[in-house]
Amino acid sequence: MITVVTSLFDGSNFGIPHTTGVYDPSWVDKLYRGFKRNSTIPFEMVCLVDRDYNFKEPIRPVKFIEQNNTIAGWSVLLEAYRPDLTNDWRIVVGLDTIIVDNVNCYLEPDKDFALVRDPYSFEPYVSQYPQFKNEVCNALSWCSPNSAQIIWDVWTNQKQWVYENCKLPPWDTVSEMVLLRKLFNEKNRVPLLDCIHKGVYSYRCHILNDPKLLQSARIVYFHGDIKPHQIGKYEFDNQLIKHWK
Image (cartoon, rainbow, N blue to C red; front, side, top):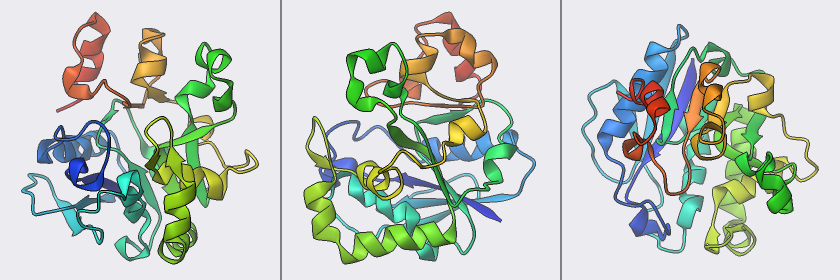
């Protein structure tokens, strides 16, 4: 059975530079319910946590190994790829994600590892930021047991190298996404989950630019300073709000 892995923790204890103090157990419950409503394939949800939380849904909490390390930054999220979380495939997803339509296709991975295209690799952004051409991000990832072991071996055996070489600008904060890019997309060869199965969109870069994409959306993810609890300014936001419950 596939495992959906997400995380809930106080980012200020790990030196994460923004969006701390926002998430609570209700976000995990909403993510679980989004997958449950929009799939017919059995799954388990694991949530990495920094302390005890009360979830309403059948979510398996697992404590982070890393505790209160202010230099860790986003690298703490590499624990989503811990081999001990599952012996099967996993899909890793952030809490700032809304499931809006059937996601069976994403719960049946057929690649050892896959990421999605970075939202800034599209026009009109890539012309302004050419460094994002062919770039990927980890808004959603597929990971086989073999790939999880590769990630975990690098993280546990080369942690200092990760701290020094996997920092995300402009914050200069250690990032799990940078390591995943280096491991799997150094030559732009990582399978692209949002090309294999279309319907994964960034709210900030895709939906705000073209709300009609909601008609074909399956998963909408948020990044930066706009989160699901802050939307509602536009009429089309109601099409998302009704799914975040």
